[in-house]
Each structure stands twice: as structure tokens, then as C-alpha cells.
Length: 172
Image (cartoon, rainbow, N blue to C red; front, top):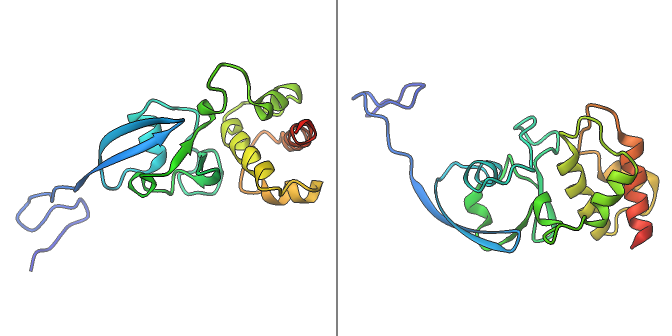
């Protein structure tokens, strides 16, 4: 029987090799072919392998929403998602909302309403808000509060964030 210690070394002293996977991720309408450790999260693939640093590593436990991206238009907490699980799905990051340099309506609304202070949570807030509106769940102030509750703003810009979402929703 082979025993493994806390560092992953076997009783013979060898550290088992971690399997690599070939993954094709479609991110912001561009295909990327990657060879990754099978344990790499979607967040780490985006940030460390593709250089897309908009999604932030906040809690690394799926509780703050700073890493929110869209997969096939639905919100995903990227720090808890394995990159290999997202092959064949369309990933959109905050960088992909404005491919031609013109702000997405939600980004523009966040700027108009000063819906950020330090800005660390802003990309995740924007991505979640874009999905919230697309899902048709922004019917009331209470709905916005409820469906944005997975995105934490430590600076407390919540009133401005909600105002930006209502504004973007009114614009269509």
C-alpha cells in the first residue's frame, strides 16, 4: 500500500505527476487552446494563462462575486469552476463587454452613477448586473438586491450600484 503525506509525496518520496488536460476555451469570441493542470480554475486560466485580469480573486471561496464571468450568458463564480468544465461554452469577461472600445451600457451606467469606490469588485458587479438584466430579474429594487446579493462591495457602494442597474435597465 502506498502512503501519501500532506505534501503529496508517496512513501517512496516521489510526488505523483498531476494530469494535464488539453482545453479549448472560447473567451470573448476568441478560441484559446491551452494545456493545463487538471485542477486549474476558470479564474486562474483567465488571469494567469490568458492575461485577462478583469475578474478578480477575492475570497477564492465563491462567496464575494469578484470573479464573476458569464458562461453562455449565465453568471459563473470562476474561482470555483474548473477550466476544463467550460470547454465548448462561450465565456465572456468584463474585457469582452466592450470589444470595440465603446462601453457596454452597464459599464457606462456604473460610471455615470459612481457605482464603485476602490473598484476591486466592479468587474464582478458589472458582469452579475448584465446577467441579472438579461435574466429579467431586475423587476424591483428588492429583486435587484436579492439577485445581486452574491456580489460583495466592501466599500458599500450598493445604492450607486443599484441606481446604475436601474438606469441601464431603463435604457434598454
